[in-house]
Image (cartoon, rainbow, N blue to C red; front, side, top):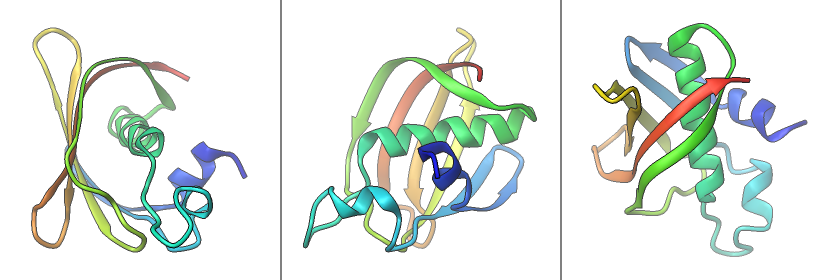
Length: 116
């Protein structure tokens, strides 16, 4: 299974520009990042944003560039992640990843996407 397929399998629901994902404890990236203290790697967080953008636009997307990123808190196994995507006037997308339960911010990105 590719990383894109593993991420897509974590999708739970969407409403407008808001997307919920749940990353299970057996998600492949947790095995090596880090044993005994699993954290979702930043590249997977970016992958979640690309998947959400694709769902929002109705076609497969990937991240073309990231102009700003801020990783605030770790994402642990089985957490429900809310991703809010907001198109910007400059053509980029603002993404905020939050704990769906309590609103704690995990990550903020400003990126541009392209068709995959």
